[in-house]
Amino acid sequence: MPLDFLVGPIRRTVHDGGDDLLSAGLGLAGLAGVPAPFADPAGPTPAELRRRAIQSNWKGIADLGPLGGYGSVYGSVPMVTGREFGAFARLPHARHTHRVLCQIPDHFDARARCLIVAPSSGSRGVYGAVAFAGAWGLPRGCAVVYTDRAAGAGYFDCGDGSGVTLDGTRARAGNSLLEFEPDSAPSGAGIATKHAHSGDHPEADWGAHTLQAARFGLAMLDEAFPEQAPFTPDNTRIIAIGISNGGGAVLQAAGLDEAGMLDAVLALEPNVHVAGSGRALYDYATEAALLMPCALTGARFSTTPFARIGTAPPPGWTARGDALQSLGLIGAADPSGQSAEALEQLCAAGWEIPAIESAACSTMFDMWRAVAVTYASAYLRRGVGDMPCGFSFQTISPSGRPGPAAEAVRAAWWSEGSGIPPDVGIALSGGNDTSADPALPGILALRELWRAHSNDAKSLQAAVDKLAVKVPRRELPIWIVHGADDGLIPAAFTSDAYVEWLRRQARAARYWRVPHAQHFDAFLATPGFGDRHVPLLPYGYAALDRIYAHLVSKESLPDVPLPQPRPRGAEALTRRHLRLPE
Image (tube, rainbow, N blue to C red; front, top):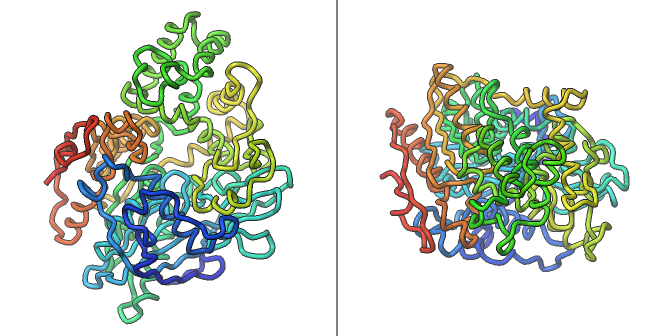
């Protein structure tokens, strides 16, 4: 299969028992433990960076806490030896590259050829789906191919002109091929990220990234097993799976797959946009950034995890109500009335109370603003130093003030970064004033890009229109799994709308809207939060089991009833809590 989309060489590595494919030799206990060490923190080796990247992506997606049940109630982390093939790739119309990486286990099942295609969740790097796709596919003898969808933590530091090379180490521009090098990098512009600053509108290409990764995976199977080549969609089962933004990517790919490359698609909590139905991420994220701090000060949320610091809401949240009242956005003058009005507006816009409760974590960690800033810059195709609404990503010195980040911090960015600052050593700067609610001016400006009629607002809205999924082919099996309590990508705005739209298009999808599941399995290890929710990953594994059995047996995909789990409370998770289908 031709690889004309690759930029630069393929990096080929072998991974044995001390540095395997699934956990980089850490095993479950190591993945859940302290960060994998660097012998020289300022100069980690490629193997050390890879190990830390795999660990941080496991910990960012799965609940590895002592009560969470991973490895005993569901899931496992066996040793899987094999080979990796990594490269930079580019779409035909894109200016910048993205990463693709294929893992091929030594025990690849040549009699039941299977390739799992896994775009990363969130804006994570190329290992972002290892806890889902790798954990399910590699032990079963499937190859797994990943793509970062032109996001990831290949941060470019304009201060010294450095970025990330193919092996994860940092280098100066001009000395090596870098994961991301912006078109212009003024020395005072701060940090540039692919998602925010590439100018390529990567989100509109998520589906194309996914299908291109499948082509790369097939080609790497050809190389790994030349005596069995060619590997093609006709002789290899190809299943596209993803979580969150990765889930949106595989649904985009389903609509683009006119050639029939994919055999099945599984999306967990997908960030999917349906034209004329549901709500776009930018819309509800900026709405949440504006209203949710005020709404969450209400007495009904006094015991909601992440909604209080001690027994009181954060000071900025209490100030938000007065600010909204002075702007005429709510009418009440007293705090209880202000929170009630803000909550009423959210509910009128389609927010469900369980989603608002779980969204307290996104509000406490300032995720709404960080997401809105990154996506606004991507939609408007802004370069570093020219982000909308006066924002930028700036480095923080060891003293905590603006300035160059410590070498050890910079070296770990590729392994540990989320792809959406703030990150360790990187601050979200701008959009503030000196009031009791300093973030409000920037949030109002971001919200206006959705509601106003300026040229920038029209450009942003047009960019969002380009995200709408297309109708998949009629016979493609699609399964959606979404937490009913998801507060970051609410099912009411995304999966509900997508499934209903499919039905209107004479298509069908299996749909589990799982009670008591929310967006962040990794947060379930937090005391109090895990008591109220169940993890979503086991339902993704269960759906994938049934999809694979369907493809192997060629029998009808079973219509499995919606699971009815219950929260574990303060005790350890058991199968009786999950009530997984047999």
